[in-house]
Image (cartoon, rainbow, N blue to C red; front, side, top):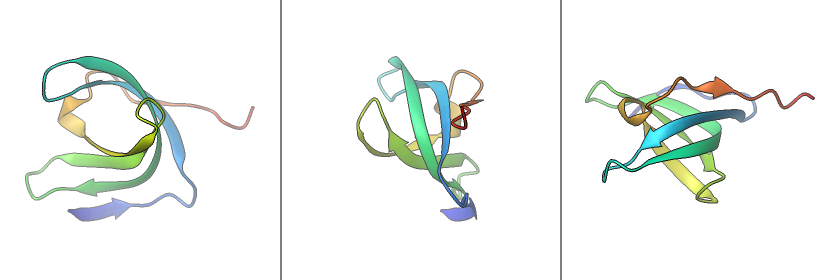
Length: 73
């Protein structure tokens, strides 16, 4: 995967995600890296609060607009 960007600090986002079994779940992810796979899809890497683990999310499985969560409040 070719790395496209790495924020200076993680960016907290939320979105709905469809897994391989087509189950849809709400995700809140601290994104550490965004990359482009040779297959042409963007991938987001970060810590998922739902899984309480580091995960990689394929952009074509995100079924809702990615929302930036303001953590400065």
